[in-house]
Image (cartoon, rainbow, N blue to C red; front, top):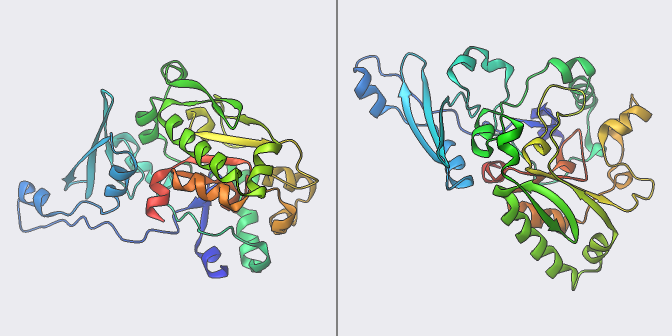
Length: 306
């Protein structure tokens, strides 16, 4: 676990691509013309992950020799746009010179929850630096261009035509229509398991409310929250029994050692509940080093990648 943490970098409250498992295989061939070059260059293997994660979205790639990168034409529900692959950043042409300001969309989502018991001194320093006010405001940010196309979320008006009212475990919640069926499948699996599993049944019984779509940015930085896309859900229990649910609230109480808070002092949903969410494409914020244990977010591409 310690070695994994040393390899991890953070962005927007999540692990930043410590998992660039395979380098892009795009190759420029100086001895052939542009047309031959385009046919000989191999598209990044990770592009197939996005095709599997979003099967109704069309991803067409072509190699652009002068940029030494792939141009990806994306089409969904009558909307379309061109992005440069840029190691899974999906950047429009005007942002390509600023690639270093953005994080890749693919990063290593961990199998297990990082345990502070195994953090090294360097881990603590790195986490503290990432969570600093300066880095939160001016550090690399999530490129939202692809997601804004898929969810039509660049502007509030068009986005809200896709927001639907639904119920989750008996609680009202508004989400993007593209994730509503996945959320219903999660609910069905949880309720079925609650019939035989006391821990899961208690989780369902103690759930106070759920929060989904909210047009807002992430606290203390410029990034859009995935709540602003309607693709994230917070599940708030009736009581947390003096436990912690969000890293920044803990930091306010213990600015020096908040990242070392033991797992047993954090409120967490049952592991079986998180596994159900993950089976339907949702990641859990409790696995982020800057943790948010009530938070689930729809990112099937990360689960396929990891």
